[in-house]
Length: 305
Image (cartoon, rainbow, N blue to C red; front, side, top):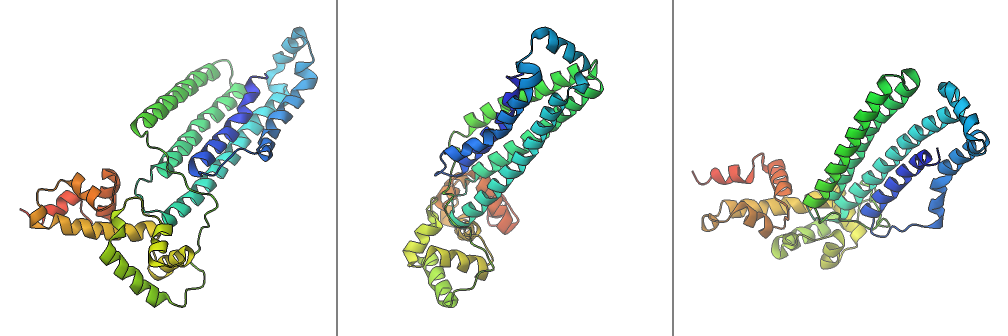
């Protein structure tokens, strides 16, 4: 019983894992011990009729399995805790995504995709665990052992998926500072919007900072001598874009120029994407098709039949 109650710690650990991956400044603190309260409460509930009784008493108690209120409470609370933390994790991921898109131009957004997929898969897998728990009380003689096997296979499959994911993408993950503020698009506009927009556009065309795959909002703001907050609001409100999309548009236009340039006809798609600031073929293809409606190869064929 004591071992089974470790299930109370699974979701807090997953939550801390997501925080540590998303935010470079995350550190465990004493206040995080509050997440252990359900685990402590669960153990306290078992003291009276489990931990302090002998084996014969517990065996007799076990005959009326569905009537053991402590176990019913523990099963219910663990599932409720799972739902709570899943929602909490999605909130963290949503904040991370906003910070990332407003401050970074790096197209390798695998961190968010990976954690979103992992959380979604976990939620789906746990739905089978909930079904298994229901069968444990409804039809324990036949269905429960089968459900136990199915859940074990699903668990093993997830572990294998995690291992292969880590092997395929060893560069995971790109974390951000959680103290970076998420700017709202409904904030008051800068009084010098037009002047700053012209200054920004001229700098982008002449200096081409977007060719740097690691360009950030802060870097660009320092280059054009604008406060990073003002720059973010400027791009969001006046251009209706995140910094991420704003930079990608320049990169795609640069790629289009290369793809239709006869002197660069021999360039491979891989060479093009690296030249314009992308660092992933999949993200380049996705962004290019979003802006042009065609893949880079299809776009090039329009000029070279």
